[in-house]
Image 1 (cartoon, rainbow, N blue to C red):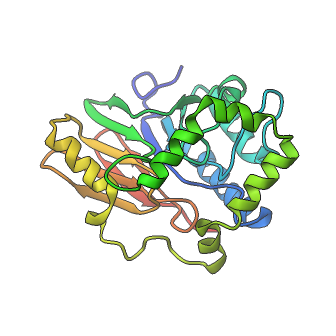
Image 2 (image 1 turned 120 degrees about the vertical axis):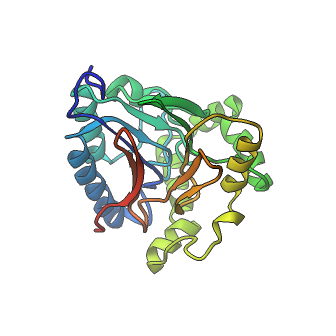
Length: 262
């Protein structure tokens, strides 16, 4: 398997999050999917590993024999990348928490739900999607327990896919994120990052003595790269709804960057 150590050409680690494919409608989602495929095609030239940090889809549920319709360009590109020996990791977010084993079996994507610590070139990374972390957001934390409840997952599975998927996509396309896309706004563009729950979570982890160089999260749709201690930086990856942002580690430095917009 190619890696930064065995193949000096492939030496960069890429991170991106919150694509929310499926909203606000098929045509607009397809434009973003094509842009995402273009980005993935470019970065596989020098990528050692790729971390997709959650919410690739705005809705994803795997029945025993059925997966959601669409996204063939993206899934084909991801399969090509892993077939070429480049590991891809997916942190299941709050919108694709019901990804079970299909993406692993068919595409060899490594699935994660809990925070993960990895080390690259003597730099330590704390990685998580970010949902449910930090203070507040108690309503979602209760809802998260419902989403992760195996009984609830089993009950949803008994809905016919045409009913379950159609209902979920209808709700997705009426959501705040869908309306942001329809109106062409930039989510959270005016927020002070020190009010962000993940900033408080990172500060708490630092106070408790976690020894990492970078803490990287998705979920909050805000591109951010700031120091939280002398030795640790907080990176929020933004999204591919309005920001088209990502982060890349070249072996010595981690940078936040933006891909060209559709």
